Amino acid sequence: MRSRHVAGMASFVVLLAAADSHFGEGRLTGLVLANGFPVPGVAVSARHDSDEVRVVTDSAGRFVMFALEPGEWVLSVRRLGYLPYVDSLQVGEGDAGTIVQLTPAVTEVDTVRVIARGTVADRLADFRDHERRARAFGGRVYDRDALHHADEAKLTDFLNRIPGVKVSQLNPIERTVSFARCPNPNPFDLAGRDTVRVFVDGVRVHWEPMEVLSTLSVADVEALEVYQGMSQLPPEVGDGCSAIFVWTRRGPGKRGKSP
Image (cartoon, rainbow, N blue to C red; front, side):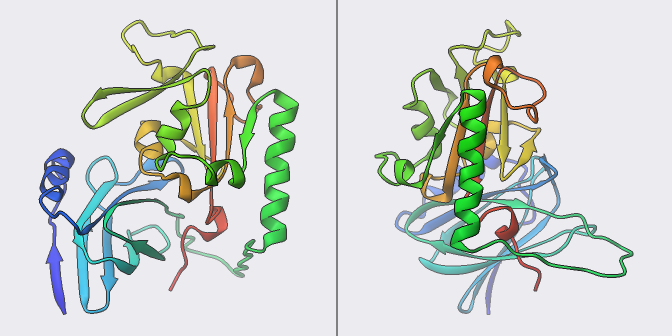
């Protein structure tokens, strides 16, 4: 078995630059979260046939794998104190991204019940909930049809096409999102990052929401809720001035499987 090891990710920028030299091969970037916070020092491996790639998340919970052959890769994420995460990903020529939501391990439990919500009926019921919430609070929901017919491949590009939403490029690797209806409370924060709240599969992202949004493609998303002002915010947002709810196609119950 051929194996490549990456000891750490002290410089995410350096890794991205190195990845550019592998033209025509796939690159997988990812972010490992637990309760909305990044998890550093997580062992991440991916297997495809006889090939295996191993990396460790950096201090911001990020990882990148490059020079991957196109095809199905089995992603495995392990960290002491959390349940193992195993999932299958399709990698093609170019960039692919994923967000891993780790679940804290329960050390003492009498009975474990696993309930999966994966049927079409369940997904439709979930989407009706999104529609009802958006209608009740004045937000806007974009369903699978609207996302599927979009010209944009990246979720951030789709967001930038929504009236009143602006995605700004601060530097070659950092972008921010802001809303026209939200005044900026921080004069030193030109892009208004303090006003936006981001949720992925119902989990609040407490750290650099654009890092999370930038890892997602339009094809990853089942539904998108956008709330552009304080008067529109659902009660679970709690603070801020605007909110984005991303519901992925895998859903919260399908983000990972214990082996």
